[in-house]
Image 1 (tube, rainbow, N blue to C red):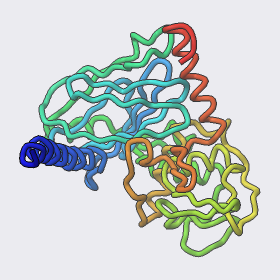
Image 2: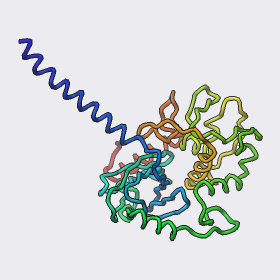
Image 3: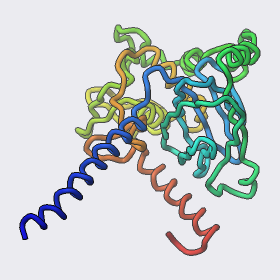
Image 4: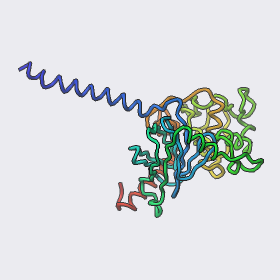
Length: 309
């Protein structure tokens, strides 16, 4: 019966297509960060959350944000795998060592909400928690005014208050004499490429591969420069793995962004802001850190459940 066969085949097909396009639209909205989103950098480490706003304000285990405004979170782990979990927001994202995780949300109700780590990360895992304070815009502005510290003179940037993340990055740029190779002006002056317009560009590596210069790429170049030799440039950059903390790297990235007009193409939840190689989709994680992260994950699994994953 042709009519019967069409009747039981066509409606489910149309329903399935409708669900697919609706889901694709929602997925695109979820993983496309609004241009006006406030950016907050988060570092997970045993056993605390360290957060820094682009205006230089830092918080430990607390996050103050204004109601009704989109917030972009850029996270990385300093040691093992953690999970940024706010139950009231129905929000959870994993943060891993060596890899940036980017997501966004818009708080809609003023209040105080629990923040947890929802991945077992060691003996004091249960104590790795905090609070998210969603404030009215007037209260948020008052908090910003009270949280900003007066600028001190001299000293290491970590001890200077009242500076934005980009300004702290500029201080690190001067401290480590990056200008001797990488100019902060459009004119090429050093042995390495200029930093102007770098963020978001596609870079040609000496091995023929291409990589987008996003947060993950900038971090990996600072820690593992030998893994990212640029075509046409001499490879003489030292590794800053033991000198720069994850927080320092975030500040340097913020400084490089102030010198750049180009922006990276938005990607998926694990590709956005992670130095994705088009020919080798490794999420911007260097081979050695990818292996270390996998080993850490297996160690956590064995501790909790026994055996291998």
